[in-house]
Image (cartoon, rainbow, N blue to C red; front, side, top):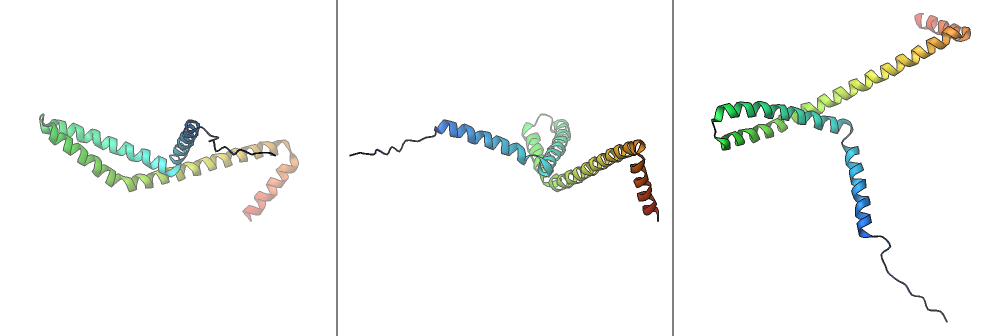
Length: 139
């Protein structure tokens, strides 16, 4: 007669599971920062940082050693900058991204046209096909 013993031991080490989850979270975080959200976040950070530098210089000259007043003005400017620049930064990032993609596609098309033209210079049949296509386009 046989007896079976069922053990309920954990087959995965919790530390290893945490390491894999941390790696997946890191990869997911870098993926979520790309594209329109990442560009708008970087543009927003740059605009707010520039605003903070200007406000810091003004507040430093204005407060004459009153650090609490300068600190309050600096943080008010930071939050106002975040509120004011978030939508324009997102729109600017989208416009820049669309412009970059259009430029990249035009460069790829120009490179493909150049390769086709160079091939047509070597092949009379291809040049005749191109001439017929250009004649059809002109009419």
